[in-house]
Image 1 (cartoon, helix red, strand yellow):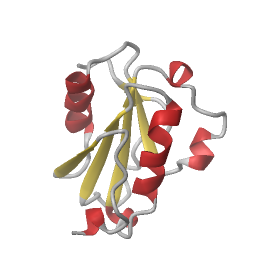
Image 2: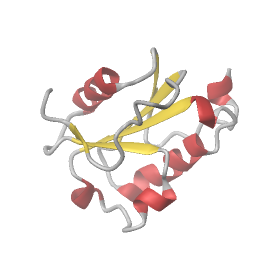
Image 3: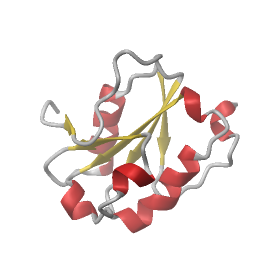
Image 4: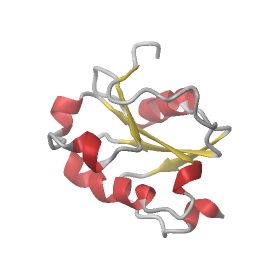
Amino acid sequence: MGEAKAFLTPMDMTAKRPVLTVMVAAIDDYDTVSEALCAVEEQTAVEELELLVILDSLAGFGAPADFPARHPRARVIETGRRLMLHEARAIGVELAAAAYVFLLEDHCLPSPDCMAK
């Protein structure tokens, strides 16, 4: 699993450690995942969260050019190869900064206070 690399935004090691890492294994495309990413970014506890997006390649993901501006909290991990869901989750758990990891399905939309509970 050592091949995965942070593609867009490496974690700021000077920042406070997040309480919860929310990991989205983006095995489909941006259109499938975008609402889930927005739902995480709209959480009432967003300041306590780390958002990891695990995908094979940003180019193949079909993300818009302004992806970093649309999802500034997302730390994208590009693996360089197509992964099975369990492989992507394993990478996300391994790279999570928080002691707890919330495995969010790319088609699920948590309520705004879900991660504060």
